[in-house]
Image 1: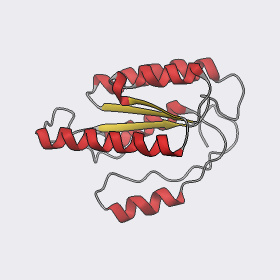
Image 2: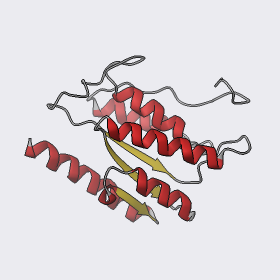
Image 3: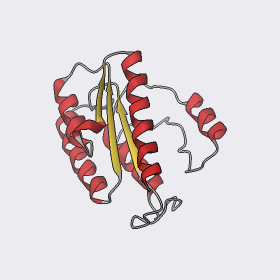
Image 4: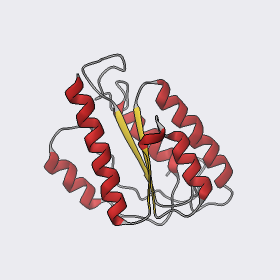
Length: 161
């Protein structure tokens, strides 16, 4: 259960940072959509996974120039949850978290997938570290292109160092 939120959270356990592609692929296969989108919680936990501090503490120090810290925020819907009146507050919380993550020099990529709400598109565009790191994917092909562009950018950054 999440304090202040009615009901029980039936989310999949977070996978800690690791470089085993088989483990990551298997964990992705276990994920299932539950029909609601609440962006701030996902961003907060993603940030905790990248952090050098608890509860995970697997991430390199923020100042460590040997590592590139990057986060991808992907959404397919409005910033809501199954409880009422979360939209505006959720968008404001998302903006605050985006700015805090960028202050830690974490590269923030964002993707909206089959989203028709211009407000969410604008929110995710502003959340990305750079305008070129926001992708609006209207279909599966555009989504594949977005993921490839992100992979290419991260590889380019790695090769440059």
